[in-house]
Image 1 (tube, rainbow, N blue to C red):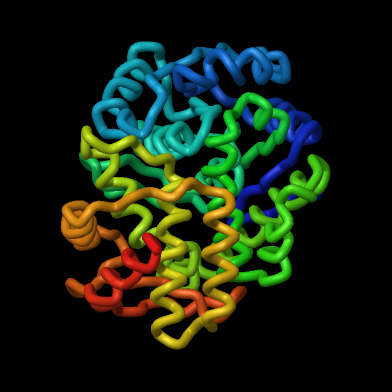
Image 2: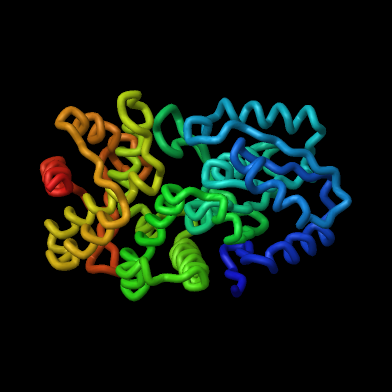
Length: 355
């Protein structure tokens, strides 16, 4: 698949990606190489990745416990300490091999260690391939609040090898699929329509869908790297989705939702809000709701769940001047940013989701 040129860095795909990586290592004089992995990718992905490297550089592996619960500043501190103890310097290169937690956290660690060292992302989950590793956002959670601490800083390159998807469970694949659905809903109606017949998509076609999803996100980010305008379109489904994800993460009585599972709910809720604001037809909304419900299990919300979720909206990063900002869809394939939504309409959206 053709390389995508992002904002000052390339995104390489599949077998040729390793040729580009080794050429890059040969052309740049790094002092040493650190690979950040989590407790999943150290076993499932690292043995595949290491033989692809052609370098004489000293290589050190840094592992942390997998899971969103470990995407925090405490984990960063431990990694910064290990980097220091093992002699990392300003000419160190960090490779982040893993899903979105690894690329988000690893990019933040690299961007802040000694005021910034070079890093490369090798995403190994569908979610990180089409979303987390592209766009330059790096960061960690603050307690249960998603991505509150971070920087926008781009990697030297991103390497996407879809062979790593074979290591994923179906639930993890569905989590990543949510971002692909979102890209169609906000930007490309024809792309969205390909997912209406998901069972008919074969492996080769899915690779092409991944490539298109990355291209869509890149086209949006290139127009607005620092999220002052159109890049906010990528937040569709995330205003309520992140609040739901955070609530389920902090509540011991709830089963933790994967990011994509929460965003899928958020997209249905925010599509309903779009309909009620006259931006989406009833037929379009029903198509979105039916398609997403066919892929994701329905989650039951009790009356006592809603108020805490609404309270979490206050901490959403998109808020400005104390108001909650939504990115809503204006027809399938279109977007309208900076939308204010009343609590009463959000409550209606939850009621409709349950029906």
